[in-house]
Length: 260
Image (cartoon, rainbow, N blue to C red; front, side, top):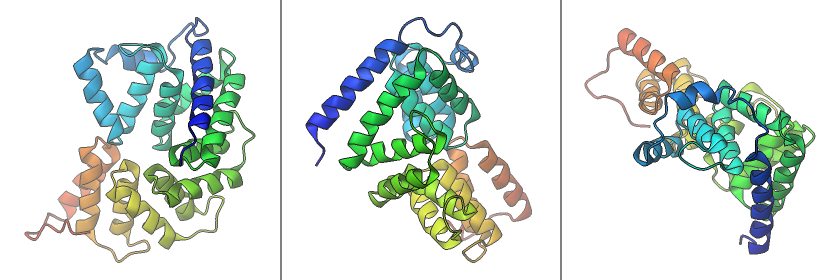
């Protein structure tokens, strides 16, 4: 059961961080500047953007982070900005990684990241799956803590055991590459498919690729197209391209194999 006192301490830390970062420490809007120009700050548009971000669209996650970082239509909220940037960065959105680095380097960011890490660790120890995943990401990148891949993996595993799809997707990639763990493509497939079937876009792309190439599973072009299509529907450009190639090379059969 989640500790209310722990939650309170963490919220207090985040509020302190927010106050520090809501000042004039940033003179420029870095990579967010171009994104903000193209985002209408109206309530309806922000709701639409949030819905896309919550469904796993990396670009929307990054843009929502920008809104929170600079208070465009949302009010400034450092913790929310960091949360969405980290989700987008986990899906290989380079602009999100840039924003995280910039937040860390400016305005006393190092100390504030340490406070965030301390708060996350308290929640992670209490069993909060989202905090476990976020803390793992900080250990992977060295934000607010000493970089430690082994510790990061242990928190990813803890979060994945509780069903967090971001942790499952991240671990799937690590097992597929043998990054920090013994290479295990079968475990990569199981974890990746669980995340893909729950809506994680990059996991959809990766599972589609595994079906297309026959890695860990029998080659199945129709299943590959199914996962590419699901990822493309969420705005993944790579999936759109791969799907187009497969549709051209192997037109969909009448049975339309969308069975997983």
